[in-house]
Length: 476
Image (tube, rainbow, N blue to C red; front, side, top):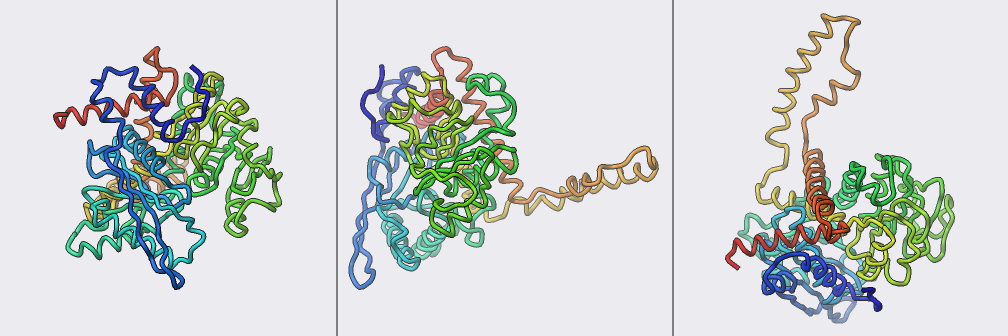
């Protein structure tokens, strides 16, 4: 049945959840327990700024505690509200289950436009928000571990971690209270790029399977594929950069707040990013066609569309005109439930958000483990690896000397083989493995069941099943 009115983000998540659980044999009580949000806390606090008191409203929602701690980002945006935070918390539950990160789902938000405040003002606001959450155990290494989201980054996470440490001076694991921190404050290599890198790994995995490409009417490799990216923030920038520089894809369109850029020959992602940083938007960029209504580019011809900013950008008003045969949801909830139905009927394949943007929580998991173990990844084994590899190189070198001109090692083989894996290499390896395994679990359901026709339903089935088994193991 066609959905006639546009559902809210929260309603979209519930509709997609309901569509999946109809295909499962769950007891009604457990079905409801997994669906509902356990608790949402609203905090209102005052901060004295510019000579007067300003009151701010923030939220922290805990969707599911089938595993603890619960995990989820904190976003700073004027549109933050309880429904949005609860929907995002639910997605976090399913996302963590899908990629086998041992967390429940949570999410936080603060109703604020961070661009309106100086850095020292933002620090005061962030520290007070962290204080309000921490004293309610809504920030805690063993109970609730936030991370960056829209409008926040390493800087805010460092402030939160420091605020928690000030309040818990004897907690040896204090740094693990939040992830996405700067390297010199307990962060991990590769976290900033993690979500965009995960999008790249997700697309690589999709393109490994001929059957999956055929479902979207695509063939060949990523090389040369036209990609349009909506939102060149942290996620969109890194995804576009890696796909163009490492996989040979062509970024033909970039959509930002003040308009869009289009170039048939492909855009220089780094140059566009630098322009945005310097000028605050894409307007005036010299080496591409400027489109005043950037959302029009969502309907432009391309092979892959990457919505990487806000929820609901593909909806009932434009879904019919979207031409991309493959959409990968780098943002949370960029396709509404109504648009999802229209696109599926058109034969469009959607790689769903709960999988596509799970790179961030995956590497956050690695950072949390690093903080709890109090040791950098690779520190114990890297040099031993190199010494073991040196034995092989020495033997090959001996053969090289004996064989003379008839055989020799490739010029760069020695350097590449000798290099032991450091933290960044191990993080990327772990992320790649996670994205591959999660995709394979989804596609197995997608291709093995006649009643599952899309990856989103498959993702929900896999994740809900894992959550249900966790509750069952707890005796519920």
